[in-house]
Amino acid sequence: MSYAGMEDIHLTYYKLLDGIDTSVNLGVSGVVDLSFNDFVTARYLVDNKGFRSVSALTDLKMINYEGINPVRIDRNLSFTLRKLKTDLVISLGGTFRFQPVHDAAYAVHGCLNVGGSVILAVYPTVYDRQGRDMLAAFSAATGIPVRDKLGRWYSTLFNTMSNLFVNIRTEEVLSDTTSAEVMSVFSTDSFYRYLFRDNTEYDKFFSLAGDGEGYILSWKIIKGLKV
Image (cartoon, rainbow, N blue to C red; front, side, top):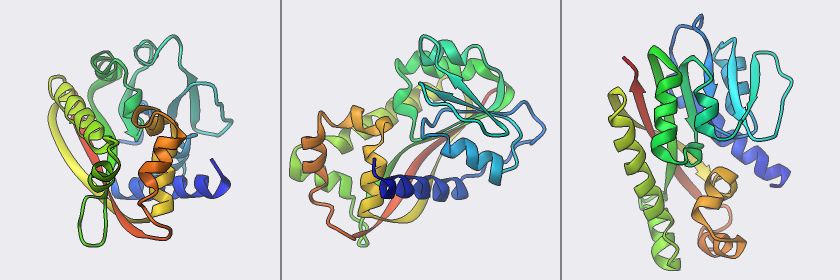
């Protein structure tokens, strides 16, 4: 990803975090971050939300940052999560890594203390200024079923979480954005490899986005509580 693309994706997550209520007792055992976004979420939680301990799961990348504990995935995501204990699990755009979904959801539930919360920003819908669903429009025009894949994944994840957590609720966080920012979000590994076969398909899908077009991101969020 280019430097400009990195700035775009950082800005996207900052705006999303500004709109999410992460209110918990800051003296609790900390946070587990499953965003897989180069520690953007973890740094924000430490710097702007006051958390003193954030365990950020990662494949290979590491960071030396006060308050952040990078945790390399051992064997798989579920196995690694089962070794942790926390009061808040948060994932911004990283839920496609929950594979297999039922194993990962049970591991999220298992690593939470009683009374702990989970916040999952699953994916963003993209609207134009007239309120039209542009992911659906691009999918229909190109024959690439991005919107359907996202919708099915959201339904699967919501149903799975509903079987494990109480007080399950959904929210949406809206923010203004540009075509470049939208493309940066979906070029990240957490989305790209699950939605597109290759760069040709990615370029074809977003060839309709236009340069400098203004859009609205509406993130689909699932929240739950462990009792």
